Length: 626
Image (cartoon, rainbow, N blue to C red):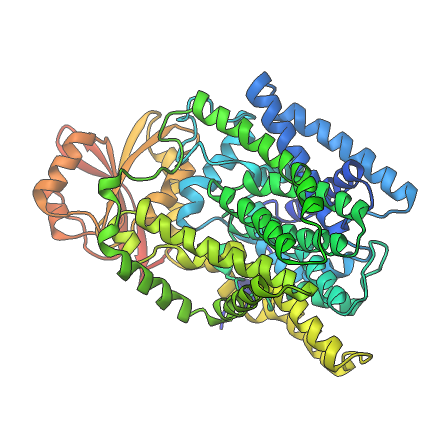
């Protein structure tokens, strides 16, 4: 059990923590007001945030790529526009935010938001792409045009829609705060939660209007849909700067919109369907510009809508196809602009690419599929729900008669199609080792996680309407759920603050000291023969001022025999070495007498060999202090 100061540090202590919470709320409410101004108040209130986000992405992208206008000018234009839109919304009585009474959701989620905002970045991919790119946007106020400007950035050709959110939140906060991404992820999930509750009421034939006020019970179920009832709420994905949660939120809201478009067409309300289609069009523009592979999700959602319209006798196929230009126009625009930028201004290796045919993993087709099944069997909470959705989707291809059939087809067919796509990617894009272990397969399925929540909300709502119509939730059950949701972050605080797991803070602390210990222009190489390699990735980020250059690192999965190590150092020619763990071969090659346990050491090259600049003591894998 941690002492009280350590425990409190789980919630309070992050640099700029409260600034980023306020900035994130203000940002998403401002974008929501812009979205409402663009598409009117006849759509879904929770979708307006995504519409405003889409407008911001389009403005940033077009003005910077074609006119080289720095982001900062577009940002302050959006701030002014958001302020005016908020005042206008309040004056007209439309309100702001994803729902009336959304503040209750924020109160319930406050402990989780505190944890999210207090955390420091700690995960491999955060430092290999997302965080360095966010930092570059904040400092350079533009996209990379040569492709190599981002120190530590992996693929400068990846789309930037998600990163514009932490960029704008950091701009509002006036500083870079590493917890911005995780805070915004939680907020996006909560906004989707409103859509899940809307589906619950729709299943019971009780339409939820934008003027409906979320009660404490409603706010509770919004929070539940985002967290405890979300089968893909995995802290090491959600509470990071990864783009998986934002992809899931955009796809989830897009699914809710597509359902209500089809429902409006089935009931003959084409004006409502058209209004919702404009919202969906902007949402898809965000979705397609979050990750390179999200084009597949856009095609599957739009295609799923077309299949439902084809199979449902209550829906005019022609009416649906007349809406497709509206639904696909914004996404087509932003996708075309970004493709122009990638092909014109960036090198050919700026984004992920398919391997040459001769390197495809066609010799392990069955082992890949088997491994996918093994992973699925261990995550039955998600895959079980989606398997049920897929079953009803296949039934819907034969007989589609109800709203449940429509939603099941949208979700089930997307699940089958996306997993078929992932299988293709493992065969054609991954190396044999990663393909054989289906690397990140579970994480990629997080993109469809809120689809599972949407299906569950509608399915349970249908069952409630059928068997429990007219009844209310028992008060004691609601109270118990409220207590569980509110106190869960306090109970699992240590698990949620995985960024404090050693040796991550140790690596970050050492990395922060390095620029002051080495002359300007120094070149450092990291040796960590007993480590996973995260020491190298985590150390690179603090060197962002470019006073020093990280040449590379060697970890446990590298060859640590004497000759390969000697050749690696000769070819890279570092003037400093940072050694986090020691094997005898290191002392043999370097001519040093470093202890094999207990210290991390910075060495400087001299005419007489390597000399110690500083050692950081460690105990049982933990930092023992400076």
